[in-house]
Each structure stands twice: as C-alpha cells, then as structure tokens.
Length: 175
Image (cartoon, rainbow, N blue to C red; front, side, top):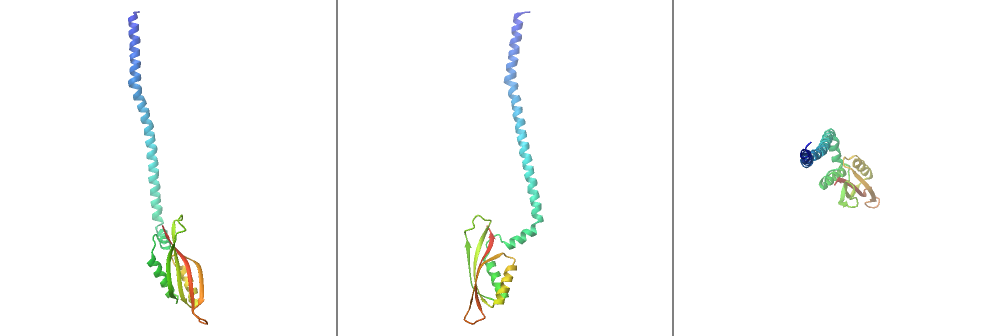
C-alpha cells in the first residue's frame, strides 16, 4: 500500500466529514426546528378551531335564548331610561287612584363592583289606603324591577281619609 494513498483517503474522509458537518447538519437542524414550528402552529390552529366552535355554540345558544334575553332586558334595561321610569310610575299611580305629589331620582354610586347600576327613587303619593295597596301590588307585578326600601305614611290633615305616602325605592339598569 502506498502511504500517499492512505493520506489522500484520510484527507478525503476528513474533508467529507467537515463538509457533512458544515453543510448537511445545519440543514438537518433546520428541518428539526421546522418540525417543532409546525407542531406549534398545528396546536395554535387546533386552539383557534376550538375557539371558533365555542363561538358558534354560543351563537346558537344566544339564538335559542333570545326570548329570555329580551325579557331580561325589559326587567333590567341596558341603559338608564329616566323618562320610561317616570312615565311607568306616573301611570301606575294614576291607574290605582293615587296622586303623584313628588318624584325625585338620584343614583347610588356605592355599588361600583356589581354589573348593574342603581337608580334611587323618592316618591310622594297622596290618596286612600286601599289605592295605595293596589299601587304596591301593581308595582310588585310590574315588569321593571323596583325594590322599595322605605315607606312613610302620614294623614294629609287631621281626621282625613286621604294619606300622604313617601316611598324610597331603587330601580336597576346594566352598566
């Protein structure tokens, strides 16, 4: 055997090894990195598909419960509607034979962490006691939720059947 052939074979093997490590291994590592990136993107795609399917399910459920949502929005309106509240209270008072002597509205800022706002109501009414009872029954069965906090009653004049009532209540609307 010729020593120059051995050296030449060893040199060619060394050059082949160096070329393999410098050219082929980076390509191999790049393919491995792309596989990892592909797996991550597939996971993201699966996550997005599950989110889209959840949104579609929620949309179907929203359509199925549209009547309930409309009823709830009538009970607890989405915005503060002072004219609607005043007209409904005035209509209830006149339908039940009471005279509305005073009405003032305010707001309660103490419930800031709830998902609703409170509209405070101070009512002055004048009339007979049976009319007042029917007004309270009508207010209780009214579609709009109104919570009465206090009721005060005083006779309008001495020995008079007409009574002056003062009601403090709360109505609610969404934030």
